[in-house]
Image: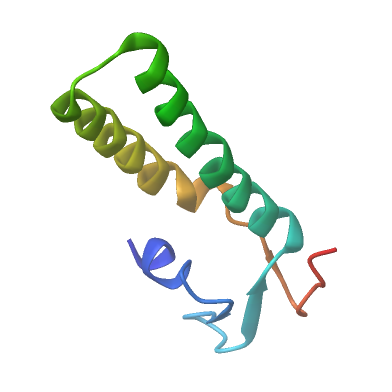
Length: 85
C-alpha cells in the first residue's frame, strides 16, 4: 500500500535508509502507455459492441482496479532522476 501511495510522486524516500529514489524512465513509460492504450480500447469497444452506459462504467471501473493493483509491480526505481526521452 505504501508503494501505491508513493507511486503518484516522482521522488520517494526509502523508509529504511531515508535516501531519495526516483521512478525510472522505463516505469514512467509503462504507466503512461497503459493509460493511452486502455482508454481508446474502452471507447472503441463501446462503439463496436454498442454497450449501454452502465456497462461501459463497469468495464472502466474494473480496468481501473486492475491498473491500481498491478501498478506496484511495474514500478522501478533509480538513484537519480532519469530523463524520459
